[in-house]
Image (tube, rainbow, N blue to C red; front, side, top):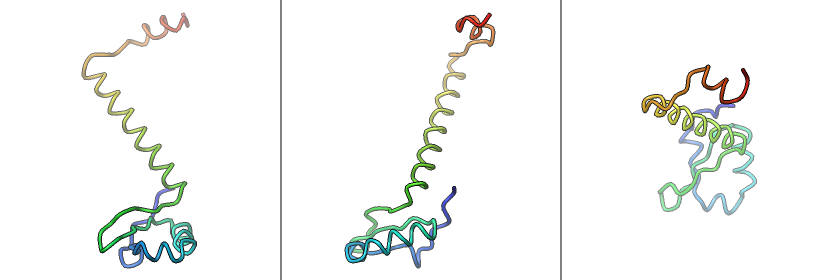
Length: 92
């Protein structure tokens, strides 16, 4: 699931509003699929997003880190041929 684009006219919420009616803000995040930027004194302090969106984003970040690490291994010559892998796993 990919979150929708932030609508700054609707998705920037003063922290005080979150304190007054947190359920309303959480429902909005759930219904729209968009994160909400919480502000204090006009400055962003936190982002509230659906748990499923957070988990999907974390999985994507983890995957991208693994790809970057793999590419670095290839560039550094830390690679094995398919035959070497088969032998090391005892699959011959």
